[in-house]
Amino acid sequence: DSGVTQTPKHLITATGQRVTLRCSPRSGDLSVYWYQQSLDQGLQFLIQYYNGEERAKGNILERFSAQQFPDLHSELNLSSLELGDSALYFCASSVSGRVGYEQYFGPGTRLTVT
Amino acid sequence: GQQLNQSPQSMFIQEGEDVSMNCTSSSIFNTWLWYKQEPGEGPVLLIALYKAGELTSNGRLTAQFGITRKDSFLNISASIPSDVGIYFCAGYNYGGSQGNLIFGKGTKLSVKP
Image 1 (tube, helix red, strand yellow):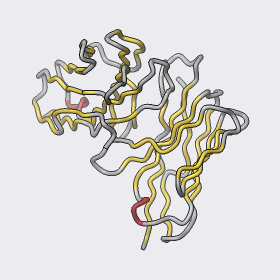
Image 2: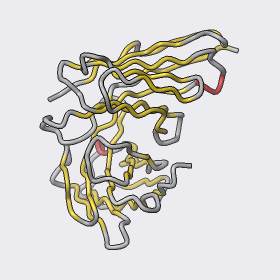
Image 3: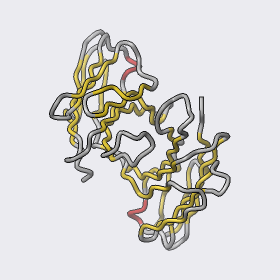
């Protein structure tokens, strides 16, 4: 158990809908990262927050957004969902805001868009 | 963008055998991390490397940060059935445009008892 929690574990929704994924980092960690994992693309970095502020952005679509709250939990919002958004979404956390530092992953949310 | 080439893509080995896998990049990396992922789970951090030439062990696992800073190796000694999973390397280049860890495509390890 990495100490990173994610909810829900599974999510099934229809195209065009909007969903919110939630992540709680390990105790003491200030950075939260979001990743998308699909069969053909592997693990892709989406976005990083450090202590409530956006720190780095990867290949995140404009339909996706995230935020980190004062209690350091984070939410990833996915809107206007398409079939291709079906994937595993992972949250990771680290104590440092320095990118490239050790990141600890949660169990993931499996999103299925029908 | 930057890419990591991880090889082999898959390995089928007998229990007790040693395993070697590696990652290479065309760019210099400042950090190498090795993760293991089992079906339905998130990646689990195995070893972190921060210095060229660094050799670090974690039980039966040993990883090295290549001296050229463009590669890293992971070795597993005396494999056991619970070593089954997908092993990912991840690297970071402070000067990179993507701003965060880049992951290899993974090495899928199967161990026959």
